[in-house]
Amino acid sequence: MSACGVLLCAGASRRMGFDKLNTPIAGKTAIERSMDALVAGGCDSLVFVVGGNSEGTVARLSVPVPFTVVSGGEQRTDSVRNGLSAASGDIAVIHDAARCFVRPATVKASIEAAERYGSGVAALPVTDTVIRLGDGTVETLDRSTLFRMQTPQTFRLEKIRAAYEAGGSATDDATLYARMFGAPHLVLGSEDNRKLTTAEDWAWALQRLAPPPTHGIGFDTHRLVEGRKLFLGGVEIPFEKGLLGHSDADVLLHAIMDAILGALKLGDIGKLFPDTDPQYAGISSRVLLRKVNELVQKRDMVMSHVDATVICERPKLAPYREEIAQTIAADLGISPDAVSVKATTTEGMNDEGKGLCISAQAIVSVRHR
Image 1 (tube, helix red, strand yellow):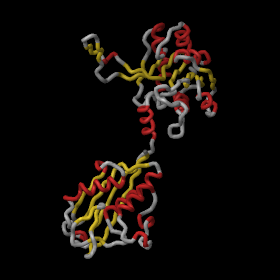
Image 2 (cartoon, rainbow, N blue to C red):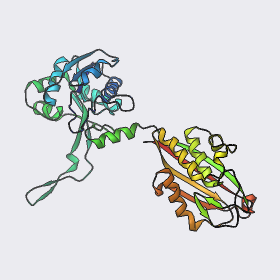
Image 3 (cartoon, rainbow, N blue to C red):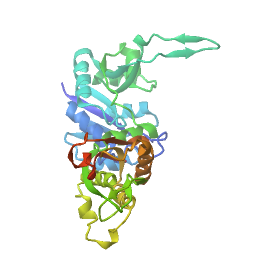
Image 4 (cartoon, helix red, strand yellow):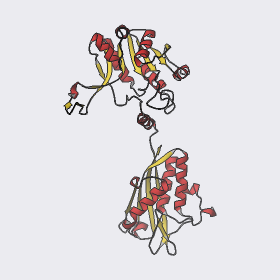
């Protein structure tokens, strides 16, 4: 049997507050994403029901199957009726373009159900307790009989067309179908098949399509010498020795900066802040860390987690770890809860254990906003 997708793109986006159907999400509009899913799921042809800016969006699409464009109506019912009048084939797959993350497998399942049973409507069982409040009464509804309706809502074309021609209105197609032909057959939808209705839905969509976080590893070590102040994580630590280096030699911040630059694929701090450049002589590593964080922000990214370990026998860092974490968080513009600072010894082994140096290693995660 042939299946025609009726893609509803005529909504006004009143609750969203901006044109949700024609605004790209990670490079593709909701209309294009829905079109791709319908075609991948088995639609041989398409009817775009348009309104407002969506007519222009559809005109720019590269549609891989035969298609027709019709105008939407005042209500959803009117738009579907217009779309069905232009549809052809055996099966009508009615889908809201705002559910642009529908899985092709859901579309396919709905078509197969319509071929076998006459209908195939995507829905999800209600898992929460649902109550009906009356005048001073509370009634708990039987959730085993409750479903959250989604689209696609798929039917034999002649039946759903007859249901719409009979008149009446409803917020979904299954309701009109049931009035004439009885309860539709349901197929399992998905939580991803979420309708973009509110600003919260839009934020969810952006997050869902955001590139995965990137990660970086950093390591640094500096010799302990007399006559230098000891800085670790931007905090001055009382000690008889300090770390030797061109800057303040804050080994912990250096490891974190190298990890960040690694996540951004920008080399290391030696490349960015060479020790041959006099402007960095004695400079606070906090200043350098803030400069590295500017590179993160320029890429519209943000630090999401820092996990660092200081390796030394002395001094003991337990009294300073919270201050160090807060200082690092402040310079990176993130919550202290996203910064983990640990300390360990080498049990007297190696140069760290002999008090000749302090080392640090760090792992960071950087994500798009």
